[in-house]
Image (cartoon, rainbow, N blue to C red; front, side, top):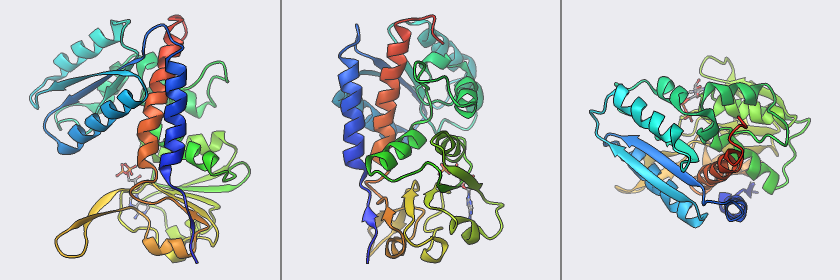
Length: 292
Ligand code: ADP
């Protein structure tokens, strides 16, 4: 018995290939600027991974690494400069930021046309209002778009089916629900206050788990044959002193689910690939600067 394993790499490669094919058609190579602050090791490693993928997709990237002590006015001034720079197509503020910085305010300062993370309220609003049509591609958050691309790559039907999203974060859960709704699923969002989580998740044909809780989803909480997407990533003690990567979904769910993403190697590669495609989309739109 075993679920079909939905590896992220082939779907991620298809997205990167699309990004590079579209990038070469542009007058200038799309330019992604990554802004980070402080010494958080996760922020450092995310930025390195994004730069590496920008190279793979044939995009330019620049990092602004600021000290832990950077002030809000200094960051706002940098963002204003990047917004005004016609040679910058995408701006990403890498999280986590030092605790004294107001994340939402900084995200709102980014020009929505350059908001490749899709976190600006204008882009969030457009995502929930159903988007602007095919001639007006959305800048939407990368992980949810990556998850949808993964489901499409493996031809897992979404339209008309029951989708349950566990987690309601601004980065994953909420936009994931909007993306699934846009793909015509019947969507339920579960969260920390949901009573009888298992009863809700057992309803799912497509179950996306983004709760930040190792092994929250156990086999009894999954409908036999369901497609399960695990967005969590955690370092837990393994055999001996080794740390081992695992997700929000217990490995034994593979005995119940019809399909399951692995951790690592599932959703992770898709998020960063989608960021490259979002940067290309932003650059395409900026050819006609009047398009918002
Ligand atoms: P992520 O970055 O994966 O989205 P966050 O820590 O930002 O994670 O958000 C966690 C989300 O998961 C929250 O919306 C919270 O309500 C939900 N969550 C956390 N624990 C549980 C739980 N035990 N049951 C259901 N939902 C949970």
